[in-house]
Image 1: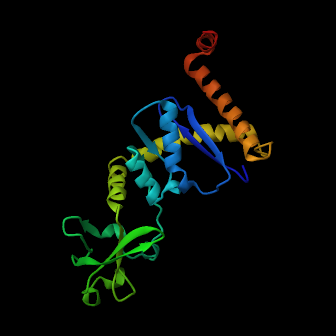
Image 2 (image 1 turned 45 degrees about the horizontal axis):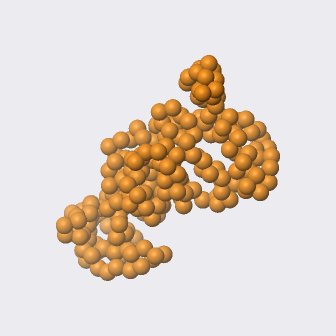
Image 3 (image 1 turned 120 degrees about the vertical axis):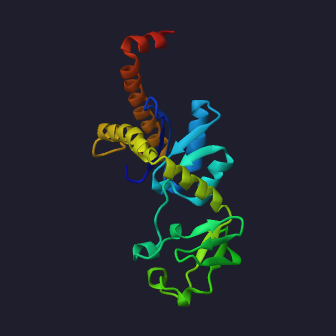
Amino acid sequence: MVGYNVQTAVDTKHHLIVAHVVTDDGIDRDQLTSMAKLARAEMAVDKLTAVADRGYYKSEEILACHEAEITVFVPKTVTSSATAHGRFGKEDFIYNAKTNEYRCPAGERLVWRFSTVKRGLKISKYWSSNCQQCSLKGSCTPGSQRRVTRWEHEAVLDEMQARLDHAPEMMRIRRQTVEHPFGTIKAWMGATHFLTRTIERVSTEMSLHVLAYNMKRVIKLLGSEAVMKAMRA
């Protein structure tokens, strides 16, 4: 599917594709809220739980889902250079909302120092004045102090991570739900993938594939006679 990005939403109960969108945006992380809202509208429900892979992780999108009362499960993308080099990651620093400070692995307090705006996000920075004397400094930071940043709405991200920690099976459910229909459609499409050009025609082509998949799925669930009866009604 070179040149186009297909977003799909699949219900976990019947494994039917309830919504899909074709875009020419190759980045998934801007699509979480729009797809979740579209799936909720198509399913005609008030409450929705959306599960996505780590490619959809974006702070602003998770906040938007939270504000839209959509419960999301998205694993965090690990980009920390400290973790990559075997040092303590941010998850090793415990935040205390009452005192607005962090506690490091050595038990020291990282207090609020200042706030700034970065790429439109309000970020606060915390650090301790005792890093130079710390016996764990080599496992923490090569700099003079270990600084920890916190987004003003990071409590929403912490809440989602807590949900993931208590329901690790959600990502297994996502794989079982999404990979099969998408893999089946790609197998149907063959090596050439889309046969048409322009996003309007590709969207139509994808809609026909989704319709065919859902029809075969419904026939498997209900049987051909029940489907034919429903179509005649």
